[in-house]
Image (cartoon, rainbow, N blue to C red; front, side, top):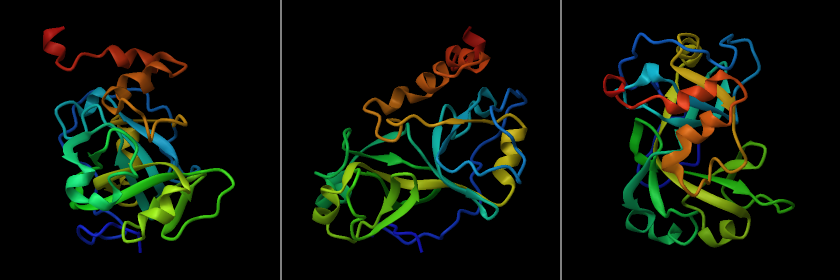
Length: 220
């Protein structure tokens, strides 16, 4: 069972992550959509213009888990106007600025999911569930004091994005998402609202040109 926060229980996997109508536009996916290819855990999904006018428009999603059972991730660039102190006051001093909840995705939005980065050469604290490298989930029922000294940073997400087996691969193949490498600071970025264009601009190919794509092409 995932170590979800105390707001509400949620299932291990989402029933599906697609939250809006896809446009007809297709673009370079930046990764194989073959379900037999190595997993995308720890990589980023970057919404393409095909997802314009959907709930995932200009979203950057960190994939926490991707395998033959499906995929699960959190939206990194959707800070909310609700502070952590308002919802989880005990953790208000533990989160990385900005100290707000993030809209992690359309599934189980009444549940909290804490994602942190473990410091080097420290033991895993109580309530820690490793996901990949030094990134893991934090049980929000654990005492925050045992977590604070063990992590480099922490974010709390309301909800998450999830895909059933093969669903994400299909969305990547049709051009809705780019699959790109995550940077070391993406999860805890100090200016998350600007993450979408910055992730695109650092790509080594023509994908970087999407960073200049207007929100409303009709006004271009």
